Length: 244
Image (cartoon, rainbow, N blue to C red; front, side):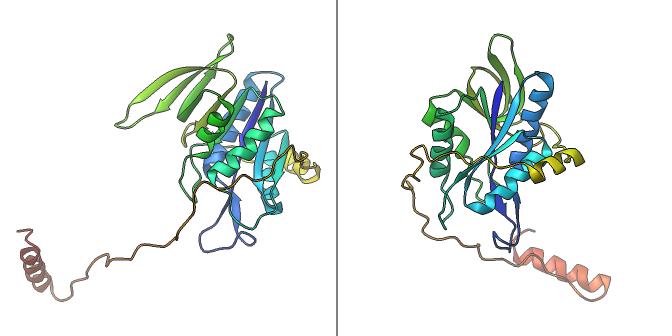
């Protein structure tokens, strides 16, 4: 069985991509789930893929340190962040040229929270998919039984034919720490850089107008004085705000 895991490099808050970045935490859960499949099914290979500039190879090496067999870099020499559609198009193009039985991705990217790349990959490939996966089991009849997290503490069970795409929710497992042997292997193993395959970056279908932080509001008020004075002041404030 061939499994592809999509990983993204996210920038740490207040830092630049060159000075502070790491693998998307949700993708770590997806990778761990793929590695557990590998442990259960002999002959399974797990491949990590990421699209972006040269710097994203750091997260591919991290994925190999955790246990991925190979790291695949879909190189994009662009200074702009890829949109979910652009990233999904590049990954789907790679999948069409290579046979994968399952594609795992994190339920979302923690920097933009868009939750779109995995479902878009499935749509572009016409693969069945399930989102917010909290449990999965591959069956002998070439299907996978999936449990999804829904709202109001509900669960939904679905069955998908392979190949398929699963976006994995946090809490499904506990991502492992890299072993020393995998760290040493990843340090010297080459990153795979596929030929272009017509992989020109598609035009973005949306434009970011602006990104901003909302205005901060006062978080609270500290009352000073004796205990009695503070109680009287608090009572007055509650009346002013019509709470009493």
